[in-house]
Length: 86
Image (cartoon, rainbow, N blue to C red):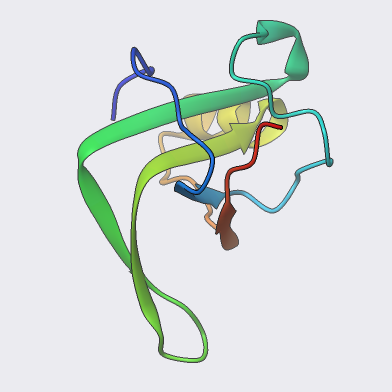
């Protein structure tokens, strides 16, 4: 996954680490404490209720990102949601 050049738009599906605070996910500010990744091919996923989806965006908090960098382990994804910037 790459750091985003395009930006998510309202209605895009995002995957996340579960440590989100409403109103702090602005992709325009690096001061938010979140790291955005864009996968142009999309990432398929399955929820616990067995429904499926595809997301081109993953967002993780600083703590989860740092843990991933230090250990090399995969990012823990705990949920999905719909991006709304307005």
